[in-house]
Image 1 (tube, rainbow, N blue to C red):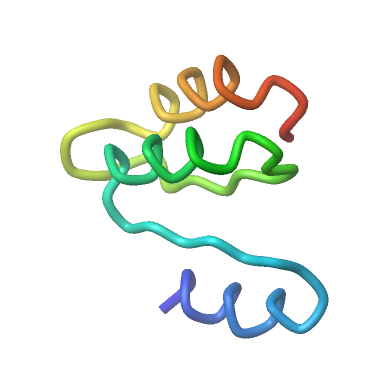
Image 2 (image 1 turned 135 degrees about the vertical axis):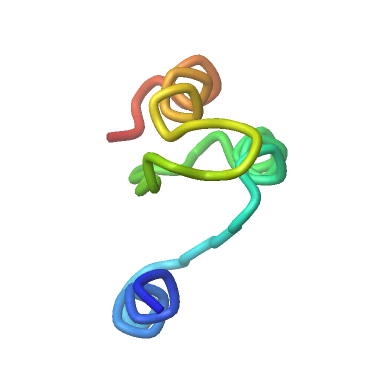
Length: 64
């Protein structure tokens, strides 16, 4: 519900991409390396949030 709420609120002013699966999120980020902001849950199946954010930094180093 948090993901959906953020999406509904932020899409009014920004292009918002969402993904629930962290492996798919990495693929999505590779397709959109211009991503400016990344929000991650710390506990996800297959990959924790810290690992996702470490990987994201390699792909989109300017993202916060």
